[in-house]
Length: 166
Image (cartoon, rainbow, N blue to C red; front, side, top):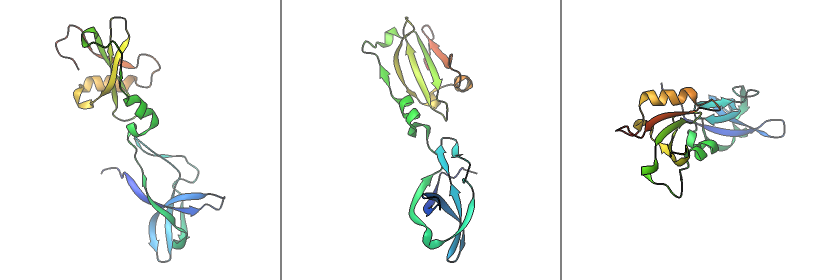
């Protein structure tokens, strides 16, 4: 079954000076049973912040305000870190003939990959987002396996002398 990507939510007074974000679970005439949403959408689904998240209350329908759509899943590129990860870079002196190797790096969530083109001085001279369909399954799995490491988080996918570049 596909993961639900969004839900209709409302605001209700929290009784603590703020508001809870809630969705209707059950209609009960002039009252409704609601679920509290306390967390944020992430690339892997709803990230609960504990506390009130998931708690159910019965409230008067008239307390429901500010109807809106709440995303439950957020694409990695829609996060600040994901957006930065996707930004291209090209050195002023970039020349494809200077590329001696290519490496990929997997973003820490989801299916985002970044290609690094490296020169003979081990300097990155071009960086860009790469479509996962352009990579082999083995390279994607290797990149995912090391994506949380502080060093060595890139996987070589091509070097000068090979006939096919990734």
